[in-house]
Image: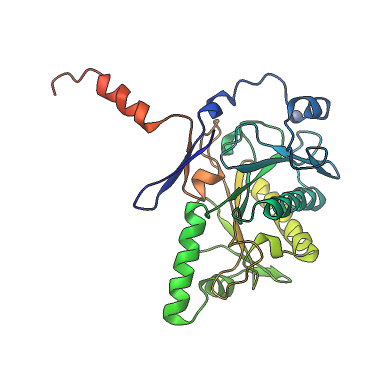
Length: 292
Ligand SMILES: [Zn+2]
């Protein structure tokens, strides 16, 4: 169902042909009255879904990874997010990642991401986050892992300490930095000092992170932006590396139209596609080439 592809240059994409059907939805499958009926269940989880407060975790119907869950954040479509809603949702993502790691140790790279609305690549308007678990880190996560290791080996310095030194404020062990070279619009980076992976986050760090993120989203709204993306960048489960700090990047979206660019394309630089490039080759080959 999902095909992972990697070019010899290292660039990656993921193919799931069925994802083209995502937009043919008439009701909201994440609203309370439909969520039980219309969302699938994991066969390796008791009761099939995980719940915390109003947040519910269940499988993505159109996965881009062997383990791909959706976390419905809240009951309604209100786009104001409390720290509790963010905390509950990320806690569920981490609970899910721990369950997967217990049954399948090869899947040790966890990525949490959030496309806030159709303008930021969500196919369903109801507020939801997602978590994917892969054998290898997504493209940009692997880029930062490789780069920061090489930087450390060469200079005996942690690249993320450089970002921490540019931070504008911090809350316990989390540092908030606007890097002078952003990956995308209004990018804000939240760096967990001396933690390398998501599964090593403790309750307190997660609570502090939820407070900070809820506040950054409010700031984005106050600046007139209502669409945003978020992605974590995490090293492998339960391992600490001197050269790599777990971090999240979040940014706003300027466009007011439905977008096909979500957090995985934007932050992780992996194309998620619903066609085979080989089929595209055949089509282009058949297309009349006048005057050529
Ligand atoms: Zn809904």
